Length: 312
Image (cartoon, rainbow, N blue to C red; front, top):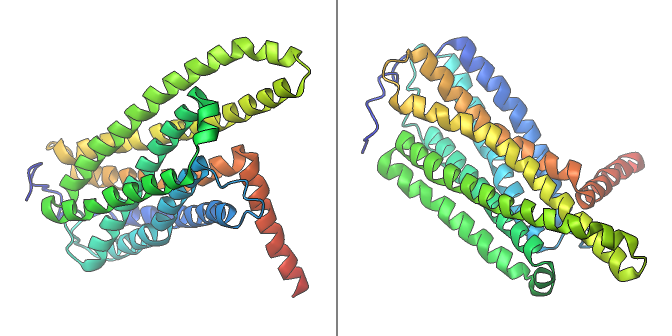
């Protein structure tokens, strides 16, 4: 089933240098995605003080799991594909029916959609935490995060059936429009409200600062920490926008630009993939850099490995 066009560039040869460059970039992204997301997952799972066992961090772990799967499975298969492509004079650049190419596309679709939905869940969780901090702390339930995470993976996995029904390009087109645009709308709507709420909090900051009792100091620390977390997600949203919006434009070019040369279409295809997969490589480093609890947990993991090496 196809309804976006005939894709006249499907049988056009891809420049060898383009395939090699893309394979090299994907190799680098594989290393960064696996390393960064593995450290975030280990920090969440092995944190001895359980400082990271909150609903927010369950969603962070879910995001890291999606990006880790892409790094472990999707990216290596992408490297193999482009290496194979560089050695062939004629390849099916869009419609290859080899089992490993089907697997690569399905893994990328599922993991990227799970990553997008996890970002949306993180944003909504932040809005609840900022808008009603007392209710958030008293009513915080990690089981809710587990249920939402399960739903995220269920919805993302359902795309595998859509892929076989409408084809790869059609499926990617719909995912780009529905998942990316819908997720970005959720991000913008919630952050507009969150930033407005912080402006109101800033008016009371001086009052809290002037107070010397423990309650005011505790409120100050809580507000400061919530602001730090929200700023971290703002940075994540900026990276998301910088990666996914140009990728979305490239998808439109691939789908509708009948007058574009096949060389340009191939460049658009590879740049689209690099931008989407690159976002999964950047996410874990933002959390590890910005949030102290993750920095502390990751530092403990790395020091443990160094200690074991010294003993041996």
